[in-house]
Image 1 (cartoon, rainbow, N blue to C red):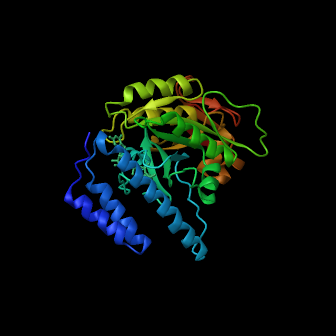
Image 2 (image 1 turned 180 degrees about the vertical axis):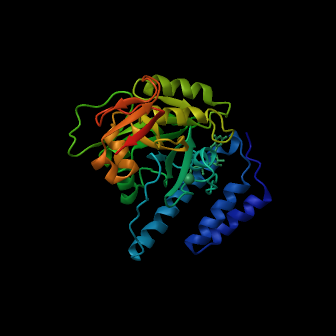
Image 3 (image 1 turned 30 degrees about the horizontal axis):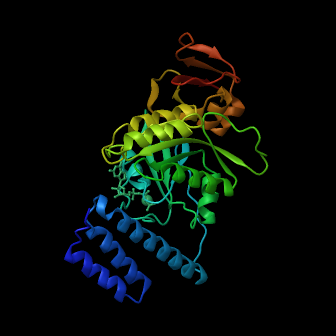
Length: 330
Ligand SMILES: Nc1nc2c(ncn2[C@@H]2O[C@H](COP(=O)(O)OP(=O)(O)OP(=O)(O)O)[C@@H](O)[C@H]2O)c(=O)[nH]1
Ligand SMILES: [Mg+2]
């Protein structure tokens, strides 16, 4: 198929060739990318431009770091859990976050658009989950602060572009880069053979994004065939916002997040904002979360919930259940 490039494209290409500064070159490459007609006949050319952009970006980063411009990053935890959105360049990580939250982060059709981290809150059933958008990881590119940030999070959403011709390779590379940093993406089955002193195992679900594109169905089957045993794979379209609730549901399930509501004696329960815990937490943890003195002074509590009778008296070691309403007595 002929490429049918437009005069505007050729003009941008001229600007790229004439550019002396890296920033100018990058700008021209972005313009070329924007002008190029998106069809089968230009796929190779699009790939070449993306490679040039990635290489140029690396060069610009090295220059920046030599200039002593590096600083350390940390993201303040908020909500019931912190989930890192991880994947290769241009797979749709940022658009996914925009679609799952009320964020309006920059999305563009070229690699390495996201340069720093961006936290955004995702509400689900009155639970708040913090998603963190990260720069893409690639063989040439994973900054130490990104891996450090992933290591201390609760979970990974590993996003892939389901339509990518090298989908399996994309998965393999992403997993192996994480492993280089001793991060094991733990799917359905824990890997008992890893030395816990060195390795961090993070619960992971694979998000097969761009599932709206027509060529995806077959790729999805192949992905399931190769990785379906290890991972839960959720096909979604960040663009059309389809199947996004499955992601929210799975995060809450996998992290075993539960909601507990507080009630003062003689008052109605405060149902607007629950306390969130992981399954296995006890009444004592709840008392501590309400107020640190409450844990020390707690005599007993009463619970309203699913498997108890209304107002049942409970002790400090009672295991909290989802949607419990608890009244503390000091
Ligand atoms: N058709 C389709 N396009 C998508 C979907 N999700 C993202 N895109 C497009 O893919 C391109 C990349 O999206 P981003 O969200 O910027 O991707 P990213 O993974 O954050 O990219 P980097 O930050 O560069 O690593 C944009 O043109 C998006 O509009 C999707 O579900 N379907
Ligand atoms: Mg991005």
